[in-house]
Image (cartoon, rainbow, N blue to C red):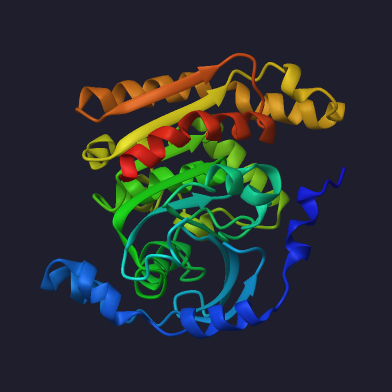
Length: 338
């Protein structure tokens, strides 16, 4: 049932302040980036041109903006929602830590603000919150067939764009749910040292599990996607699958604090009011996750990774539980970024 938050994307308006924001954000802030760089290598990284650029800015409120980013990697425009830090306007020479929030499958970049109160959580925070689109079934990867290239867009183009235009610094965290939870872990493992903190809510973590491969294939086929186009044939290109398999790379998480959470699939009070088919699907999607997450957490712990878990009962694959989990981890996220 639509709610006031569902209509969030309809709030965009172009005001004089929005026009000013466009002019400011479309011009890279080389001066402030240089002042915050600290060393020549970081400055080179900040000023590197990846080919991505902001082509439009819509102001949703005083601190929430929707960006249209023309991406070279994607060969198309990608929408990104940004919540500015509390002091972004009042401290124009300051750089800020960044929280990347990745959405789940069959959804888009508006989901976090539509379904949670992340804006209220960020109200008194000096963290830049970045919510990029990841495709309804993009799997947060550069596809084997060549396109789309979501990983390159998120971990190279968007990171540099945030540094140049929004004074982002190198203190980063990434969180995601469902497909986005996989994305958070995949990016943290494949780009070691890029994120101080990575949190995955209700996501598969081991691409070798038969049930995961079956469900990935089934879900992709349902949506008209051949999963082999993402990582290649699992037998012929097992190396590619393993390179994107968080469970196969526990040592790659060293230096990153990891948090894993999921419910046990049993419906609870937070499911009240949901249609029965939605509850049943949410139960089935969540039930197998705790055992896999325990195994993965043990693997991470065995190689010295700082890992925490929240395997809660009851809990289904649905937004009320993810909203609660976001509140639970928010203090840790901001602490890690500081």
